[in-house]
Image 1: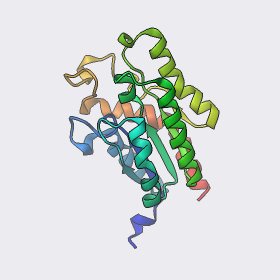
Image 2 (image 1 turned 90 degrees about the horizontal axis):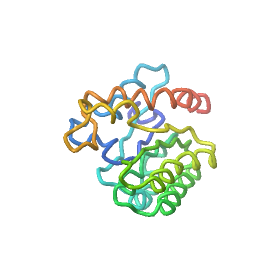
Image 3 (image 1 turned 90 degrees about the vertical axis):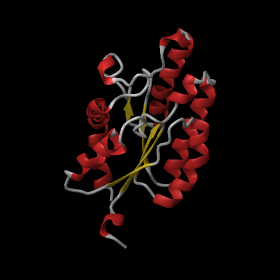
Image 4 (image 1 turned 180 degrees about the vertical axis):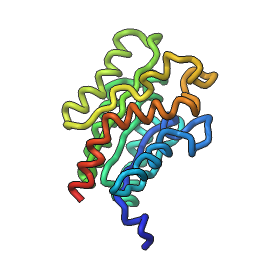
Length: 194
């Protein structure tokens, strides 16, 4: 077995925002996360299992096999945006995310959750319930929460692709920073428990 394979695995489980949609994959925030972790004393391997267009129900069907394949020390869940854009029931999204959290924890992984916001044209009640879902799950399961993956990005049109939904390559370092400032202490904790 290669030395790299024995390094703890961080599984990033998301949608197009983590799959580097519209830009070279090596420029996406998940690839930048691997580069950042490579600078740390304890080495880790980041596996990006993100798929563009993924919903929470699709993610739930895929997760069990990925947990068995990779035995991650940490699972970073970044799903829900496509549920929101399709106007799917928030309760279903929350239930699917909760099931993924529990599956990951049962497999022995720490879990972190990344929140997303949806455009206001879905109406105040839906957008508020959607936003609160991530906060409620983080509180219920005592998880680290990145409140909004695209904080500091969506309000700057020069950082967004023409579709207005996906960030450009020049936004990825900002996105990584949003993730890193929340999760860096937890990456250290993973090492301490190894």
